[in-house]
Length: 446
Image (cartoon, rainbow, N blue to C red; front, side):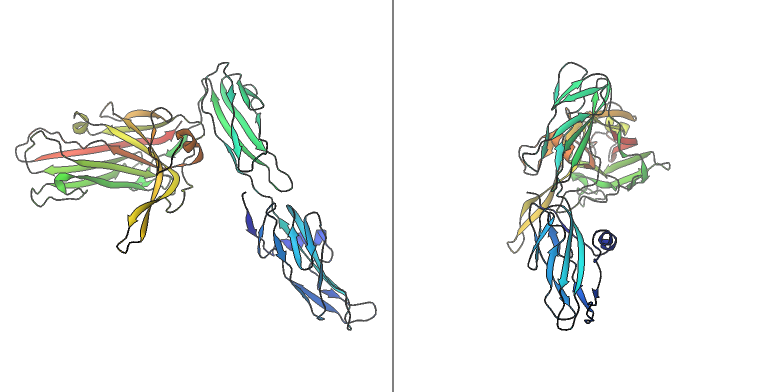
């Protein structure tokens, strides 16, 4: 059972109070027989944290009269909240009004004061995943939605009857276009109504493009404010780092990231200068480029990352990429793209020097290999359902790739090289190897 809590503030109560209870906020009164005026101090009941029904919550009522007599409490809204002694029980969502009364005596006249606060409705979480693009044929599509509240009906409706119709949970295709379907779980006195809308391409229609980035502010930041991490490359010949030097061979390496002045492109290259002749043997190395979603400098630690691009029915990742000609001309210039999702898992990571358990952050990751077809900038499209696979499950089992894309944002994109450029003509005593990629234009999902 989802338990929703919130803290109510005194501000904003006065106006509602005046409309509902004439005595709300009043101090006291004098009796008709000339008794002394007294006041009541009634602590705001909404001040403590209040649970939402059906997790019925009890709130202690505290009030004092200046005349010193006992104060009694009465609910003005017994269907919403009841009172027993100095305890208020919250029964359902709505406005709860309670009056504190002191009948007078010992020379004091009667007095009363009321408080009004709102009990919010319990939210419902409705999961309705897009079935994805559909061919225009006679095959019906079954719509599926689930809720965190069991045994509560979900209804489906189409707002685009010329493209699709819905009967029960069955979608019928009518024509080319975007089929807009709304899943609704009705509310009541306790639960709030919730809806989820999905846009399903039918026939020759395509989903609107989602832009992960439109360009580059500089070599370390996208136009959308996402961090660019272009400093991860290395080779065994130069100490495995971007800026490395091998003490024995004196081979050296250098990383260089540059952005075009107009922000249209980003280049990241790893340059290795070997001091020994090339014998034709390959040598170990790595090359990585990470780009985060707008506004992110890093993924969240210890929790899901909420920022990023959320897939609806988009079918592919699209980008333009070039390789330096020397690398492209080699026998192995394969690359891969990874989509790091906001889905976080904390994993055990051994023990520290005192034997205490350590933990590490892990995010579910999807990966697709691809082989560039030209050295010059070329458009590539990687199908989300057919080319990507789950390469990092973070120890979770039974994950579905499409469900992961529907439920979590794409928070980071990673480009990697299967191997470094390790082939150059023999230059005698030295040779320079460059492994460089240039991304031009936006990275989108469509």
